[in-house]
Image 1: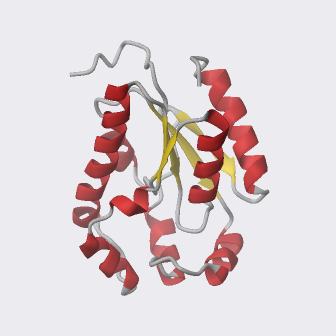
Image 2 (image 1 turned 180 degrees about the horizontal axis):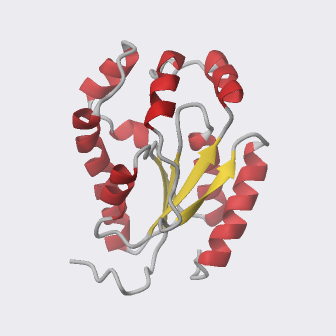
Length: 180
């Protein structure tokens, strides 16, 4: 069991938010800037979840728990190896984020917060992703913003991905000054 009172020796940035915020683009930029691994959290969904979303059916909690455990396991693997990680995960509810943080002191959330009209336009233009824009409203209804006692911050998703990455990395380095 990890000592949750000891300062983390690694950082695991969970880039969170609803579909269309730019989590993957921002996540790749953070990983490149920090020189660490990047994991696309959507790739950890079981096939049944992917098919459900592809058909336009929102996931429920029972669908999400196995996926969230897979994301948490990947965080744990990196902590055990002593390596930093950037991973995308919608992490819409506090309970989901609590599961990701359980036994994982390295977790730090970067909530990419983007206005509805921008999200709709991005999803309309997006190709090659199984998550249809029709599920956006169900995700927004589920979203619980980060609370003050959760590690991390919200960042505007309105500007360029480069601006978001720059602001996020600057703040992360100020809060988590260990080598990154």
